[in-house]
Image (cartoon, rainbow, N blue to C red):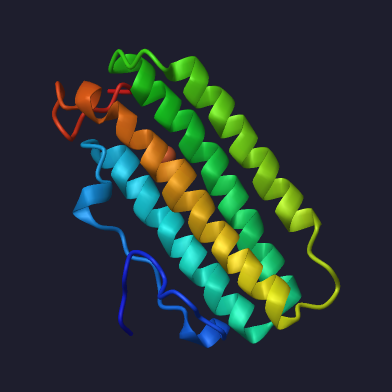
Length: 156
Ligand SMILES: [Fe+2]
């Protein structure tokens, strides 16, 4: 399967979407955070595969695992950001709370059946949620994390 960072414009079928792939340009310079982002991308790709089958109960399981891992990741990221001296930790925390709320709302809004339009909307939402809000906002931390090794782990 071909993997690109963003989907091809004008997709009319879910099957035309290609999977997201982490790229070096998304690196914040910290292995813990980058690996979490790679894992989140993998879960979103899994959600998209599940969406294509229209199996709602499987989709809900995947979305729950996305919410669980996001919660874990956001807490860890705030810890790393604070330890690295990033001045925007409070804002980051607020943004994370908003992202969790949005994810919960979207999961709760899922109807009993998934027709093409809502399924495509969900794919777009998840990609936008992750790339534009979760990862791109984190790139603000990069100059602060650059003062540390990529292996920087405040728990050690
Ligand atoms: Fe993040």
